[in-house]
Length: 94
Image (cartoon, rainbow, N blue to C red):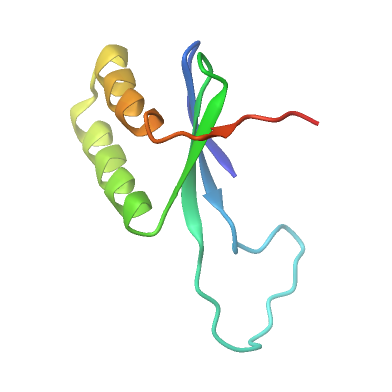
C-alpha cells in the first residue's frame, strides 16, 4: 500500500492487493490475477471509493499525466472530486 496523495480534503492510496509482502515466499500454485487498485477517500464526506479493473487503469493514466504535467492542487482535487462522487462506502475506523 502506497500513499499517493494526502490533503485536507482527499487521500489517495495505491493498493497492491496480491503483491508479496516482505519475507513472503512466492510459489507457483496456479494463475493469480493481480488486483491492484486505488482507494480515494473524501475526508469531507467521510466516504471512500475503490477503483479496480478498467477504473484503476483510467486513474493510472491520469496519475501518469499528472507526473508529466505537474498540475496544481486545485486541478488534482477537481479530478478527485469527480471520482469521489462515486463514493458510497463510509470510512470506518476500528
